[in-house]
Length: 308
Image (tube, rainbow, N blue to C red):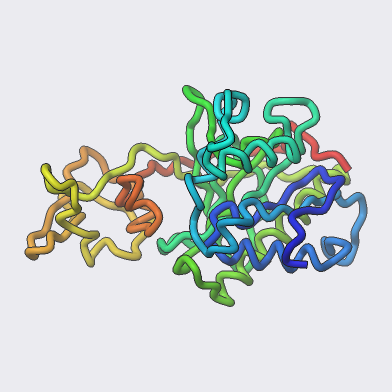
């Protein structure tokens, strides 16, 4: 079963292993692939068909984030449709295979909803990362769910979930890469079940009551302090900030601690909410943490329908 990459004939796609060392999604999709049906609660009226995808099998086999380049940055139209050679990075080739399976991106035939599963080493709990409005109004009863909004209005989204008509990343941590923790795996499993149940309710014509939800909209990323010549980092996240994702960071709060022991403080003009604090995979991307504003957003019944 572990060698199977997908089940065909779907309107909702659940993708794991986009990053091959983020193991909750890998093992959850493998488990889902063992089952012939997705159980969506005791009453299973009008379920959406579900496609399970193991997105980056080579990276999964090596338990690495990626083989040649980050797969989750390979889904712009230019990357998907531009010239490609036999020596192209594996993930560029794989992104085209996934685009053919789930898309084509931007086409009427694209899958209705893509849920891409990720782990983070940051203490973020369960988050949904979206470039559109909030998808799920019902909160999970046992696990707090936060919504992170990436405004891509001025540029095209490059992530796997953008291949579908609608999509989001489910991000959950803290979990070290290359490790699967039972509590994190279970929270992700519950999150996927929650999403599928929501789709079933939506497809059955359920009208959700209007309400409000907090949304964290990214403002900027902050890099580590670096040596001007070697570009090596010269400080790490301050102990007073470590593991305090989504707790307000005020101007002059401790931000970094240099390797010589000096405290460097946040020099921003406004309090903001940190997240992806000290994420392992973002060292190479020059990101020590991201900062967001929290807005309260009104929601109502969704303007799209996932077909069943």
